[in-house]
Length: 81
Image 1 (cartoon, rainbow, N blue to C red):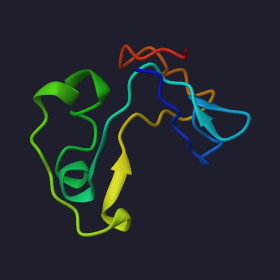
Image 2 (cartoon, rainbow, N blue to C red; image 1 turned 30 degrees about the vertical axis):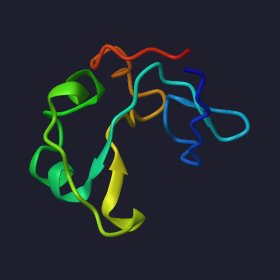
Image 3 (cartoon, rainbow, N blue to C red; image 1 turned 45 degrees about the vertical axis):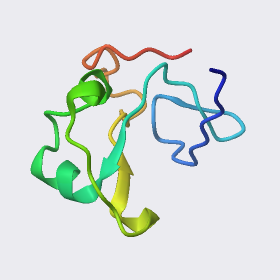
Image 4 (tube, rainbow, N blue to C red; image 1 turned 90 degrees about the vertical axis):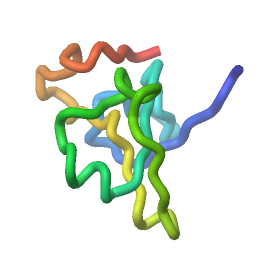
């Protein structure tokens, strides 16, 4: 499946020109889960993460975010496409 994922957070390692997310895997979840598990769930656990509900987009977040230049880009096993 060829998907286009857009993200305007240019401080993320996976951000690319045109506001494109170039991570090979992403996970987006509800803020409620992200708050409870800030660093223990990322895209590598996406298939086993519990389903979450959100009432609107303001209650969701991208858990694939890695700060550009932080040196943590290999910590989660995700790579740039």
